[in-house]
Length: 175
Length: 277
Image (cartoon, rainbow over all chains, first blue to last red; front, side):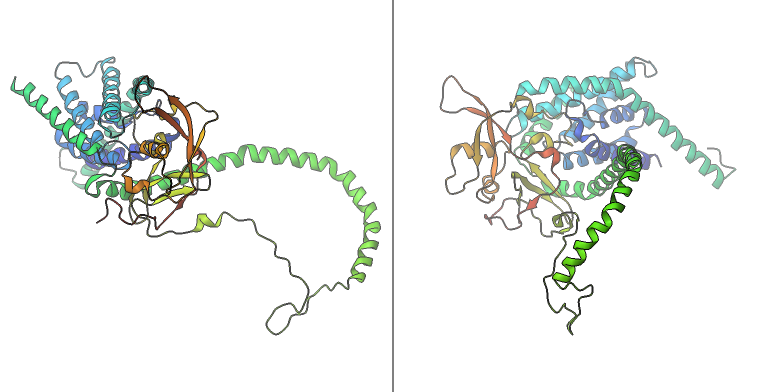
């Protein structure tokens, strides 16, 4: 059930940001999956997160015009970076999570910008990158924590629904 | 120490793989096509729902308010207009009857055996309906097909599935809508008078080649555009101190913000397109 929840959230984020938010411009449109990856890294197990990250990364690489594999690489590196960081940082801190989301958005913006400037066959002008990266980092820092709260609430709802379903089916079983 | 070395090796391998895939405009192994097939129906439905909500909001607010105001205004003026019309009616009926008699006007046109009027001119009143191109179902869209509008070149089909296709637009900010974090090429563009660039395959000049090179397309795809379609105008020229090359910024003639319908040329001039087996 939790796999289905993660896949639905991932698909919704991809469709939402590639249709409705697409007209907002690159400075405002940061990747909404970046907070989701941070959420997976902080709150979920590795075996639950990896399939969603691979499918989401391939889907984003397929529908976007970036270098193929950039999103997949970014998601995987970001996930393992978050897993490494929470060994030293306190997860429940109020300041820690916004900082972690901002760092994730910044990391993704920098890698995608690097791919656009260096790796593409026709490189982009470097001077146009700075405003895009700074705008995305700002918007990611402001809205990312709220997105993470939504993901956590959704996960709690899914857990409650699963527990009630199990109890209804087998009342003697301890969830 | 071993972990650090392993991470460095993985990063290096990752960069090498990205460098290899970055040299190709199309996605490998049909993965892009699969992503299109999965994601595009949801995008289509969400866009339709969003447009519906937008239209509903427009109808419910601005349209209805303006109509209510217009109704009030017409209601106020209807009394005086009715009196004027009643006074004019006898005056207008006399010349009308005279003209009907003069041209021998018949209320009912007699029909012949093949159910056609026996004589007299027929007038066709055109109905107001959406553009017929919107109802056109095009099959056989393939990779490398040029995409055009009357204003100029839109782009190239870089990925095509059964019902959906991905178009690489001339404006790369639009092409990278799903590409979060991509740079904005318009940032360096300045609007103003420039030199128009037109596709002319017979005289394939150097400026045209550089204009199309910003798409990083294979040369065979560049050659598939029909002659005579405009690309854009040079809006900025950066002159280098030395060397024979100059940097230019090309502003496309097509306004991608209001683009709704495009023409896909199903049989391009060049037959040997890359990426086809």
